[in-house]
Length: 118
Image 1: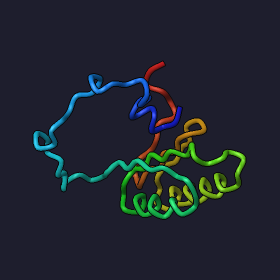
Image 2: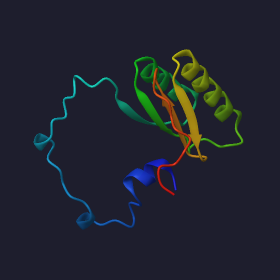
Image 3: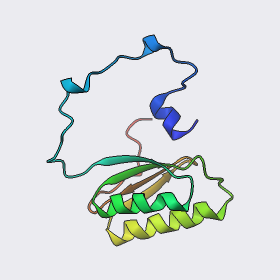
């Protein structure tokens, strides 16, 4: 199960009754005073790393889905090395969760290596 499937669920197993429609007018979506944003990304190749690096340099956190990459491909290693370098440059953090997710944080944000629940 890929990262996006974990967030969105199995599309085939859900019906329209499983969802509640939200009206965005009921929520304050303009958070201009937020210090950081969390971005969701899908990495399909080397070209996708540029936007992720820009977000990290801008002080944002990125959760990247890497399920579309073949794990035996050297592209995964190059992308991981490049994102590790960015995390070091900004004094952030980076972890890979399983074979499907990479989390990269900006300056001053550390990722705990301990689970909150079992």
